[in-house]
Image 1: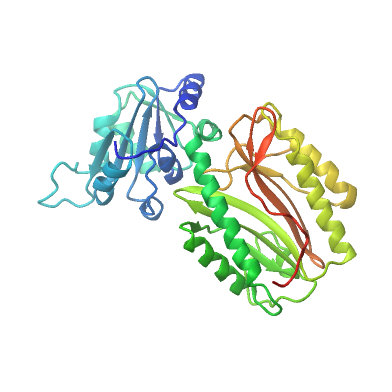
Image 2: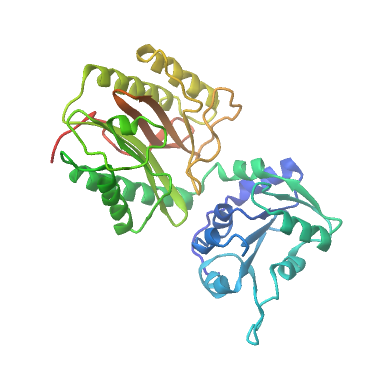
Length: 379
């Protein structure tokens, strides 16, 4: 077997599949494919009509994968998956043991009859139709929620990758702080951050939020040409990805000085985030974190409103469980959870606090390490 790590939480998958009455899982989401196979390649995201599929069987500890010819040999070298079938998009006279299509590969792997869970948001109709033709007695069961449940509790190898991504993210933020000066633009600091992440062997992620003053007071602030001035709130919400796994944080710093109004809004978000984070431990209902965050924030910010105050983190930067007021989920050991608070004020700027934690039986270990000092001084 080519790979040395096991990202996939097999024991949890077997328990969830038994609970849901599933014999197998057919995985088509590129991120879940990475999770199930440990084969993170950009082409899984780029060519959606060139499917990468993983089939996980619950009763025989077996995983198989279907990949296009371009990635077939590479995956055999790099992934632990024991059964990998390659297929061609366009036949040639040198195809060797490649199968003529992904449909032919599925025909080899699918059982004659079974209950197979699939990701209903990601498996396209043309694949579903082909499976119906190949296996009329196979029952396909929507299982998006169950698959996200499996992914919610992390293996040691997953946690290690999140830590690598987090270190790169935080060091790149340090580069950004070092480049901060009067008159610097949002786009300039954004480029410094992106270069810092790449220099540390990680990818910058698409959801990159950065704004100064009023420019940071919109939810998904896009860096522009606004120039930094003393007293501006610098707000960013950003991350990094390492071998498929995300880091994610949000920070606000006031440049050189902080007004009384800014201090009140900043402390409202900080106190709120800390109150929720202090409740992290296995067995805690997520709604208790939400309730605590809202209650504490409104002591300083009566109009404070958030639909969630955090989320899981992994191959997606927003995973299950969401920390919501009506949430029925209960925290479990080895979940990686981001706790975040945010308040946007068009006059004083955007105020955001977000940290990452590893849930334990007795509490949580903080993975991110920002000091949360509110004022940024020139270096």
